Amino acid sequence: MSTTEHSEHSEYIDSETGKMGMWLFLFTELFLFGGLFIVYAVMRSKYGEEFHHAALELNAFIGATNTVVLLVSSMTVAMSLTAIQKNQPKLAMILIFCTLLLAGVFMMNKYFEYGHKFALHLYPGSDVMRNLPHGEIMFFGLYFLMTGLHLFHVVVGGILLTIILLKVWSGKINQEHFLLHENGALYWHLVDLIWIFLFPLLYLIT
Image (cartoon, rainbow, N blue to C red; front, side, top):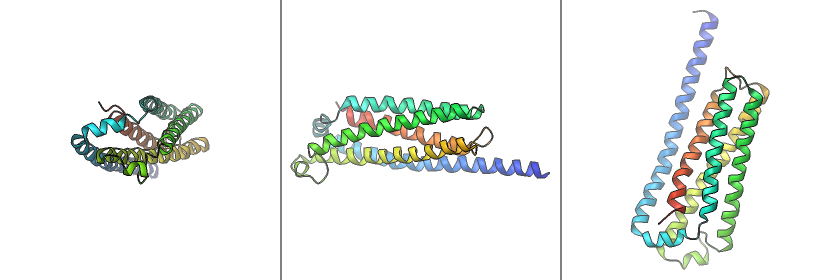
């Protein structure tokens, strides 16, 4: 095997290992949120009426807006990966920047939503929360835990996409070397997928 062939073979192995590692990481994240969804399902079956009453305090319009925002951001990040594979780095950077803007819109909406809950003293440990029925306390506890954990993943995804943007700009991510970009897009799709489950569970309780 020539030096060139050996180098190409090594890059292929590194690429496949990187993809496998990312998929394993994504599965662990799905197990984490899957466990929370199971806890939510058990608590909702036990406190159905109280969960419904507590959910009325959530703004379904903001939740729906954030769902659309994340769906569009998944599209832009996928298009950015296609652009880099077609050797269109400028287009890829524009699309990554659009994804980051959409992530910012999502976080801004969550800021206002959390702000409203804190203004009403509907947060764990507050005097108002301690006087609520147990089922409503459980609902808001799960609401802050799951949406807060998801928001953390949005921030991590934003940092990762910023790194990818800088690497595309410097040429380190290009038509032949885009594993980090591919893994970053997969991670962002996971963020989107989790929210697609969170939105109806929390905001559309009937």
